[in-house]
Length: 231
Image 1: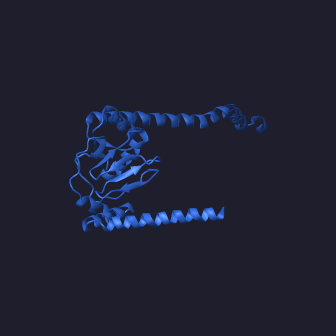
Image 2: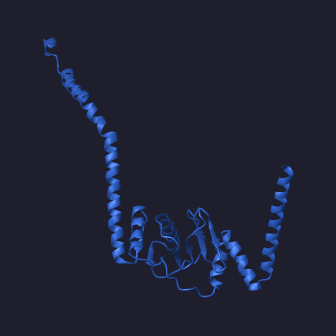
Image 3: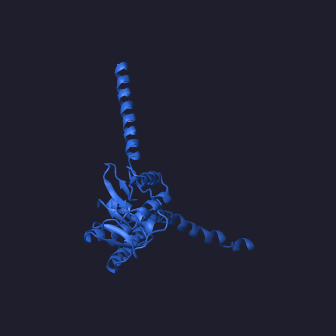
């Protein structure tokens, strides 16, 4: 059994060495410019914001996006381009164009930070919330939603309101929906808080009332002067 285990480990080691050798060969077959971009992508993958910004500066024009995405309200891009680390269970990957794709537990792409936009590959509620938080961290509260249908836009407004996120949507109707739902959500929270407080603290005074009434009955008697002794 021990001999078989040693054989398996030797096979795995040889495979790892072969894979590393192939990766090195592939890199050194690249043109110098491509080697530099591969180096930048590796640095960016380790959280180097300057490397990510340089990748995006050097890249060729990107395809026009068509899917659901979030952009800055005025199309602005942040000067710095830090890699955000939201709740992406399987982490993220940076390609040589400076696109940062975040993955779920099944290694499926959730959304991609392309620089000017956060583009969604999934539209589950949890994914939309995480992508929205990333967009707000990148662009600030002033955002616009592009692509997708009405259900997607309404979901975004509802998520922002339900989670207490401060957002300024470019679309007035969407902003109105968000504001109304946020107020209703806050009113519900306030009511729940008051109800909980009344349940925990409001019943005790009722139990104390008979004792307090007895005490008030006793106080005048204790304070009443005894005129008979003064005579």
